[in-house]
Length: 154
Image 1 (cartoon, rainbow, N blue to C red):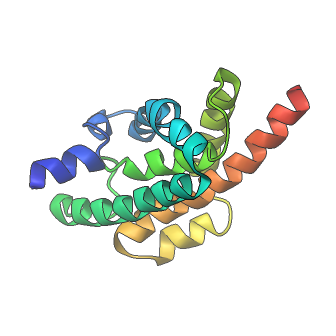
Image 2: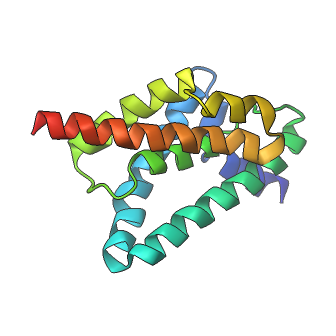
């Protein structure tokens, strides 16, 4: 079970890349956005949202277990938070290259900046929810900024 938890938490071991592990982890979310979540979005909005909420809850659980195994709070190895954060950044967006790339850069910037309440969540919530939910908030902000950028470009 330890191997499976660390495999998932580290985004198929991309979290072990010593430089910019969060960026590499975010890239893992691209195929999830294009090939998994977008087709579900077309089937059912409720199923799409339920899938995303389930992914966030699962990420909280996995991140919490990984913290215990790694004996480190919010270890750079854990990138499942970037994955679900990026999926928030692209929630209800059609998978175009413009949306994919704008959301990527905006999300990465906001994940580093941690605008309120993301920073507060990161500092105050323990365990898996503290690891994951700040990225979800940054992803929601990135979603709004990405929509504004794409609207300005069109």
